[in-house]
Amino acid sequence: MNMKKFIVMVCLGAFIGIPAFSEEENRMDFTHDSIDLETGAVYSEAETRMDLSFYASTRGEMQVNFVPQWTFPFLQGNHPMTSDNNITFRLDVSLNPIWAGLTGDTILTVFPFLNFRLGTMVGTGWNYTLFGRAPLVGLGMNRKTSIHDPITSEVVGNGLDGVVWDVHAGAMLQFDLAVFFPGDWNHIVMQYYNQIDYLSYSKAQGDAFWYYLNDEGINQNAFRYKFEFFIGYMMPIFIDLVGFQLEGIIPFYNIEAGTSVRDRGYSFTNAFIANFKMNNQWSIMTIVPIVNSFIDPDKNGYEREWIFGGVHLIANWQIK
Image 1: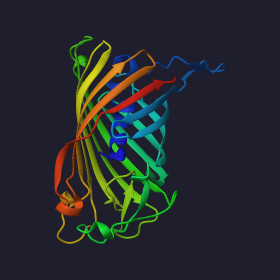
Image 2 (image 1 turned 60 degrees about the vertical axis):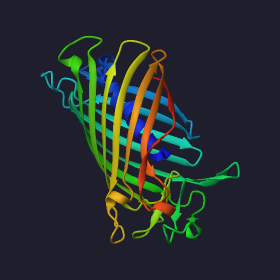
Image 3 (image 1 turned 30 degrees about the vertical axis):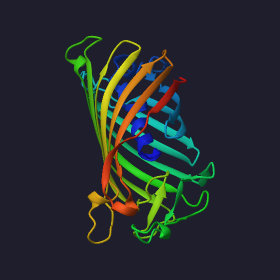
Image 4 (image 1 turned 180 degrees about the horizontal axis):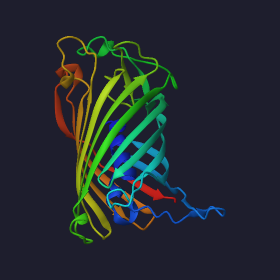
C-alpha cells in the first residue's frame, strides 16, 4: 500500500472523524469568553487544538504530521440539532523522507450528524535510492512507453521538481447509537464520507502519467471521487476504539482507448483499526490494511489481487 492513500485515510479518522463521536471531545467547551464592557455582550473565542503525530509501518514508511485547528461557534440555534453548530479551520503540515506538504481545510458542522469540508493541498517531493537498492519516488514524470516492457520505464524529474496540488470538497454523515441509548458501553459508531477533488502535478501536460509518493506512477491531472465508510465500537477502557474502514478512490482519467477506468488508477482498501488511549494526551492507533494491488503491471497488465498491507502505527500527541 503506498503511503499517499494510507496517510490520507488515517489523518481523516485520527484528527477529524473518529473523535467526533466522543461526547467529551466533540462537545466544544467555549469557556474562554470575552465581554464587551460597554454593551455587556459575551463573545465566545476559538477552541484551539494542536496534534503532533508520528507514523511508521512495517513496510518502512514514516511520516510526521503537525495539525493545528481552531473551532468557532457558527450558525448556532436554540434547537438541540443546531445548538452545537460550529466551523473549524484546520491545517496539516506533513513531512516524510520523500515528501513535504501542507493541507488546509474548512469544516462546517451544520447538524450533529452532518458536516461539510472544503480545502486544498500543495506539496512537493524528491527521489532517492534506499540502501542503494530500493528506489523511492516522491515525485516525477512516468515515461513508461509500454506497460509490458520494464526496460522502457523511467522516472523523469529531480528533487523539488514542480508541485502537486489539489482542491477538494466533501461531506460526512456520522452516527452514534449512544445518542439514542445513552451509556458508556453503547457507542456503536458509523461514518460515511464522500469527496470530489482535482489532483494536479505542475510538470504534467495533457494525459501524461506521473509518480506521487512512491505509488505505481499512473496518476494524471484529473478529477477523482473518494469515499470512506467506517463502523466501530468505542469503549471507556484502555482500548477505546476498534473498527473497520473501507476506502475507495476512483479517478476520472483520460486514458487510452480500450482501457477502462476500472483497470487503471482506482484503489480500494479494507482496514482493521484499534486505538489505544495511553492518557488524555497520548494515543496509539494500529491499522492493518488489506489492499487490492497490482499483481505485476509489466507481466499481467492491470490485473489486481488483495494483499496484506503490513502493520501501521500512529502515535498521536494532543499538544493542546
